[in-house]
Image (cartoon, rainbow, N blue to C red):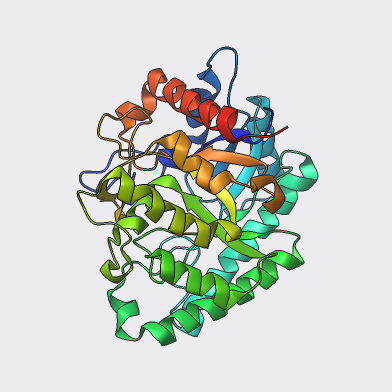
Length: 341
């Protein structure tokens, strides 16, 4: 199988890292590229990387020439650039998609910046596929719950404007379902937003195995739980199928990951799905089997690559070559089982 291409994410070197108390320092883009390039399983390697458009890896206001230099750096390691993560969060360029007019304007500015960078990478020849990832950038569900209908409507309106911007640039947005972001914290609420925007050619869903596993448990929305803690296999797989059947038609970007059923966080990403090493003994997911539910008909939805997400791995884990070889093996297994030519 030659498709989908196998990508590694660069943001585990950034997300949850920093210089606050208890945080580990970020890992540079070049070092993350080198760690990815060193991975090899039976002569097979990662094909590309997915990439977060913010400091210290990238200044989203970098000049065209600076961005072409980054593209050359990535290509020089043997990688294509795939999906890009827009800097939509407070503290980066953006702000809440369900906030004030000023906050929503910042969110849309971040999408415009991402589209500009994508265009430069595309025209430079370093990026040939992939989406631009967003979420609601409204942390936690408490404020959303105060008036869920109005707040969902506000997110939908912002996403419609963002999707129009993306479409004008020839890009597609993928909204990541993650339990820490308001309106995207359950499979049902996520579906409400996708259907409310109703622009599948411009805005779809980005499924991550670790995050969507917590959807089945209804972690931040018990009313939408499909299984309870202590579930059996006989209960889990029909529940998983129900969730994936609802969200798969919208899914245009896919993250392979493992989850041990816990929530975890660091820095601005708190109380979210805990990503685990691919061979974590506490992992709850049959990675290959779960991936098949999302990748059914993937080529028809324009998916050309899949990406590993090891968000908030400790630096010692990221620096260990065995980590990446094990991840690459897991991704090859997914492609061998569910890929296409």
